[in-house]
Length: 326
Ligand code: DP6
Picture (cartoon, rainbow, N blue to C red):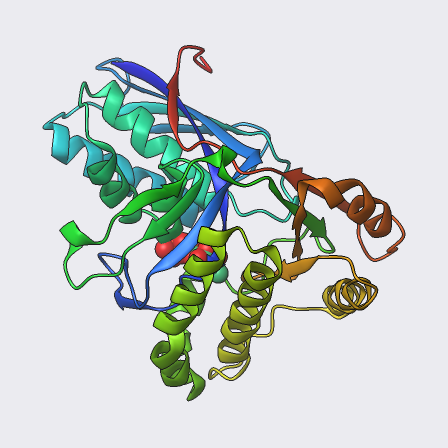
């Protein structure tokens, strides 16, 4: 009863922000993302009578009690579904270092869902796997299908699932994560979801989100990079406008975030097709085409506020692999 899976993190082009049901993690809006090639979690799960409690070994990282509890709760969901009563040993390792500007909950829970269900002997179809993973961390459901992924909002759990829109090779674009701060974020994303409705701009965001989704899908469909970039950038600024006007206000950016934003805008004025998006943190995801990667990287190297960066291509989703971590 042992299995190992690897899963990528993902970057949202249309952000998941706000939940209509906190327990079921039902999102206020449909979101769209891309799986990231250089931000992978590998997880081995083994259920066995030899374990007298759940053991969680997070290699090269320290997790607090709350994070450990989230993992145990998810093991409980898996055990319930498989009617298994055994404790588990879990080992998990990230390809991206702590402080790389990418949260590990999306890749971490996607890998745990796949490895855990497989270790229990369950062969769950992709759609159901995304639903199960969503219950642990919303955005993790988008790390299971390949490439460019859509996660549907719904009023019922069974209809809020993720699926692939296009495979990774569909479009040769890059997400270069410019890390300006490597400390854990002050306000966790889960808290942000429960605060956004206090902003009066949240209603306006919800009224316009279907229009933004149509614009993005149209741009993806035509591989129209400027239109894609403008939509993604505007959508990120929209989410942050809502966060900044919540009570209490959530301002995730710092001075270095602003310096990268201004740099991206100045390069664009000079004719370079480069855009950005930002999650609930200060680090900037710089988006460009494969053909301009080298130029963008050379420009980023000149910005002193950037501590390090990682270059991501579109990637496949979660997979079972043979090499166990223990
Ligand atoms: C800003 O999926 O981390 O990154 O369900 O509480 O674990 P929980 O939230 P999470 O939220 C991600 C928010 C975001 C935007 C996005 O990835 O869509």
